[in-house]
Amino acid sequence: MKIKRSVKAGMEALFDLAGVKAYFARKRDKSDMVFFDRNMLSSFYNNNGRVRLYYDGLKRTKGEWTDNFSKQCRFYGLQEMAGWVLGKELGGDFAECGCWRGHSTYIISKILSDNNFRASFHVFDSFENGLSDKTPEDENERFALSAKEVAQEKMMFGSTEDEVRKVLSDFKFVKLYKGWIPERFKEVEGHAFSFVHIDVDLYQPTLDSLRFFFPRIVAGGCIVVDDYGFTKFPGSKKAVDTFLSENKCYLCYELPMGGCFIIK
Image (cartoon, rainbow, N blue to C red; front, side, top):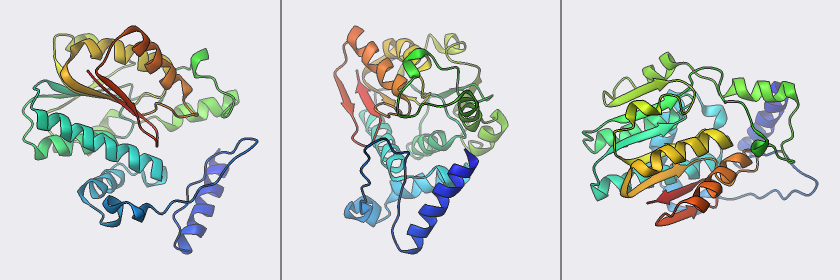
């Protein structure tokens, strides 16, 4: 897997020398390669505050190797929704399920700090070996992995609590909860929330997060699910769709570059 990532990075670097920002994904039997000039979008062309914050967080978490246009778009939407919720002055805490190295956590925290946030931002992560175990709902044809590759993928998404605390050291309103989801949710069961970011990739922890937090979201509040619609993590979409078949919301919007947000 390391060799494949090195080849992929080398190809992207060659395109970069030619002035083209390329992103390559694993192909299937029939695959289209699309090149998009992101400078067609004024936010990226002008390198606005949301774009700069994305790269600031990427650098602080040493995650430059994870950068791609889809992630840039998802995180831009994440910032938009966090700012939108704050502007509505709904009250309530913020929460995040799955923070990895703290990239999205740092971005959300910076937005909260800039808006004089006075509540708490609760962050849940295993801070161990990355992803939890997959279930049959997480299996897919496009990214069929061997047992060795599954173990490597699981480790790739690991981080330590100390690493994330260092990234978030400027934000005193952040509270970290180490443990597999949902075992520590009970510690905030009496809280109300206006915004929740779910980035746990897989079916069961996504469903557990939705079932716990949605009843505690204030009217007009928002849940952002990062992995919705991705072929690599089909369990995320299945979990959201299962949940929404059982519960009513005001709006669920699927983002074209991956992810969705749910407004209660």
